[in-house]
Length: 240
Image (cartoon, rainbow, N blue to C red):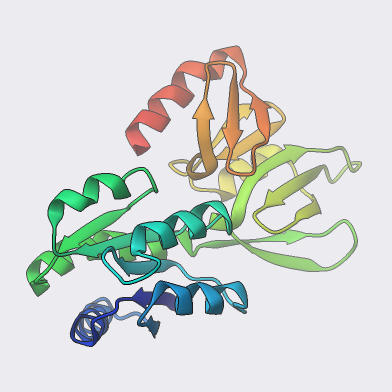
């Protein structure tokens, strides 16, 4: 299930975007759930009390009161939203300002389905890809299923013959059994990279690499081994 927010003050465009999403979901054989809001204020109030995560948000830029750009900045900075963000606009020149917020894509009104599908299909496929999960054995007992997209880093921590790790996710720290090499094999190599013998990092969670340390979305800094620096730089450039 992919949860999507649509925030657009014009009903005709809200309905159109929803219909296009449903059509694309049918063609991809996936389930989606959409929530529609006619103002950024209404959307932000609902998001503050959210009970689930949203993989995709589609905002109109030009709305009365709090516009889509302001809403996107609040979502990114105040709520640390790192999901997919798509903008709608009647004026393409406004898109320049959205790039600073972290726009994944944009659509110019009036919207044609052919363009909608061309731009949104790769995003939806990326969301599906990011929904992959791993199951870990907890040090405290039991098992836990963790979405790969939620993992920021995995660091080695000795727990005896079973090995051990600390998994930093967007929500919590998890102590689990396992060896770093096993986690390397479980995780997708195009998404995760072992920057140090004791640290595996999610490439999508890196906000800065200064040549010595990698900084993640939670403002933590991790040392990169000398022999890993060039490869990390190449991976980040390729992902960008």
